[in-house]
Image (tube, rainbow, N blue to C red; front, side):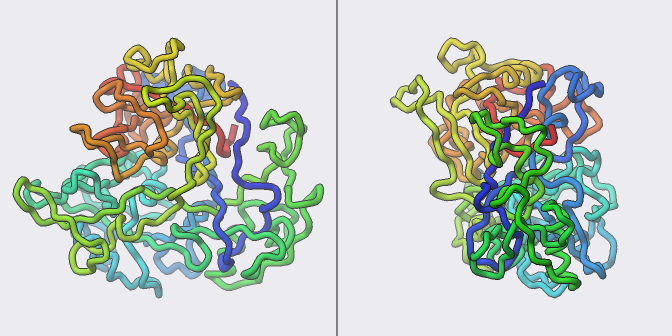
Length: 520
């Protein structure tokens, strides 16, 4: 198993203290881990993640930030849960009727769910909203089964009702207008659900969210400040609890001080080795980034627990619709600021990291498409710190992306990414489901019959199959472990679906990713 060479966005010169009320922009630190820690072969049997069949699975890399101590509740409890990875505060229970029980009586239709969250006054806060699909998916625990969520912190609907029991609305409309992205917390999948009355919509559960305030960026989260920056930042390496280490306990300590009272953060000592570089577990000075020197740019020498510094990516959705039917059953477009009809949609808030400059291409490799654009370059996502192959992986190595590169099994996709040497880098891997979703856009472009590509525009997406189903490295959070998540890059606007590891769905393809913090 090859070693992951770190591609971190936490820079030595800027890592300092975690604080909430500063005036500088947030630093991205990556997506939350999926929670998957086990590995399975193509038939669903458990295997050793490091030495077993099908290397390179999500359970081996465990890519992402924040696992242990990610969630916490205030003391005394007030019915909220704060996520130290994303800086989002959640309502603990989907009980919307206030009877103390989460059951079918709490489920709502889409526009009613939006209105409920917009009008909610809870735990002294009135700025609740329905989460967008990236926010809602961020609390899926792909290591748990039925429900795929951390039930130590989140209450769930206890009453039966099939799919309705674990389906939750997001605020993100899909390109079909009459459908919305909902998250299924039984197995973790993101699914397409009807909202138009002509399509007989079904009421689903609601879990409200709010962003932490002041200086946290659009999607919540804290900021990382260096010495001398405004807003009360602490100097040094961010050891706000004075235990001699800069780790997740400092983030939790700061949150506890802000929301629960208690001792104020202490002044920070200088980082070991000087400067802003915290050298912890440097693994005998391995040159992780292969730049010829062992320094704080190497992954193991960068503190990997500073979670409270970045937003989740934007979904790309900017338009809004109601749920009324007009001829052909299409919903009507409305002003996103309209507070009377389906208020608080994703297109209104447009929260998260993104916009111009999010993706940074790295040309310089040979090969062009029909328009003369390079197809062999890589793309850095400055929101997540991940580096991607802009094009699909040329499995056959013939220099052409065509049907010969598609149709492989999940095991073949894993193996191809593990063996890939590209752009002078050898630490590529198959992306997990959360990473693959992060480069989807919910504002599709193009004019094909399926609604256009649903990957961000910078990614080359030739139509090899009808929908270009992308393999991911994440086994489903379901009892059948022979199933894996795949992602459509057309028509379904970034929806994850399940597929057999042995046969796939449609004509599966894949692209490779590298970077991010991992446990291996």
